[in-house]
Amino acid sequence: MMGQPLEKFCRCLPCMPDSAPIITFDHVDKFYGDFHALKDISISVREGERMVVCGPSGSGKSTLIRCINGLEFHNSGVLTVDGVEVFEASKHIYRLRQEVGMVFQQFNLFPHLTVLENLTIGPIKVRKVSPPEAERTARKYLERVRIPEQADKYPSALSGGQQQRVAIARSLCMESRIMLFDEPTSALDPEMINEVLDVMVELADTGMTMVVVTHEMGFARKVADTMVFMDAGEIVETAPPDVFFTNPASARCRAFLDQILDHG
Amino acid sequence: MSLSEPSYTPKGRSLPQRQPIARAVDSVTFSIIAYAVVVGGIVWLAYSGAQAMGYNWQWYRIPQYFYSFTEDGFQWGEISVGLVKTLTLSSIAFALAVVMGLIVALLRLSGLVVCTAVSVAFLELIRNIPLLVLLYLFYYVLGPIFGFDRYWASILCLAVFHSVLISEIFRAGINAVAKGQWEAATSIGMSKGQAYRYIILPQSIRFMLPPMTGEVVHMVKSSAIVSVIAVAELTTIGRNIISETYMSFEVWFTIAAVYMVVTLILSVGVSFVERRYAVET
Image (cartoon, rainbow over all chains, first blue to last red; front, side, top):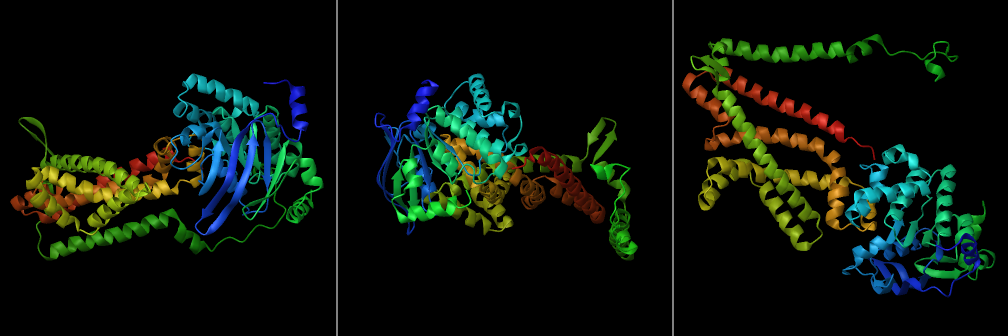
């Protein structure tokens, strides 16, 4: 892990040409029946890059990140994650998913397991880590998301913000190298959004590769290296945040930003 | 908080109460009385009907069929032996039915065309044959072919018949688990089998327990049908006793009561288990 000042310095750079791409979409198309969900997507995410994807609902942002860990499969084109090509028949798909953590809008914690068990079941059953070691890791990450005292409770006893932080810790426990966030704060009460965003900002500071679908533009401005705007299944605009927010090239993107930043 | 403190008096006016008659009708006492009147009426009708046809009640001869004390000491009676047979028969059949039901449900949900087709064909085949005919098939056709006796014919028949019903319970229970649970399990790298075992099935248990209870009760009751191929269970014993003693009223009332007690105990027992699994989502 690099020192804090250097991290901060790296974050100021709009892109990091020195690190290699870890996620690459090459002319990827995705259909749901007749519906064209992703249209000729070509984009790449470098290791350590933090990409924020925004766009109106139904624009394909969720589909885009769900393709990255194979929750959905694209129909044509090449999608490579961490050097492995993602497709349904791939033998490496389970291996790959261990490297890619995902945080969902609805948290999706396992309600029949305690918080601690939620965090250890993946490492124990999938990664074959020994239970004591898995528990040690779990407690470390609970500390990191600032809810070590909730370890033995069931998810239903936690607030939405706490549940989402547990979900983030669950992904971290898999020691993933890439983290995907699918609208992580959309289902939260307003007063809990910041506690989750704070954890995500800290995570960004550790140099984790992150792809975040969100409408939280304050967060995006703070952590994003790259902003992506999607509409109707296409990537309309890709730009560093300072350009994206002040001077977007496309009219569609400008209209979208006007709408969501109105009340900002 | 403040409402429960004695010092607090509500400032708003108190709300009008319901009519006294409506409250009385809704009360527990009234329900018990009404229940007693209905049940008493039915019993009285049956009894007076039997009196009218000059039936000679011999209830005192019934207890010896449960247990007796002879010079050899305590002995279980025929009804008790029959009850144990009924219970072992239904529990073996139920265990088999659960295993088969789970397999059928998983095949159906596998998403593979062949597996789905096989399980649907099995389902439709069994569901559209009457239980009695299925029993005859197992005893007179499959029994001689595969060489199993009437006891195993009846167990297998009940297991197959109920596996179909149980597979539907499994399917509904598995489908009732939120889709997000699959996605979460998948996203931490679990295979389909691991997701079923550690995430999906444990959660679907609480959806499946209530209909499963019904199925256990149903199994105990439908096991009575194997009396037609003379497996010595409760109903067969009842018929045998009657052919010796001609006490048909007493014996059938007793047999019915025994079935009822057993199924009631099962229902109560499972409702305790249900509470154990009542996890909030």
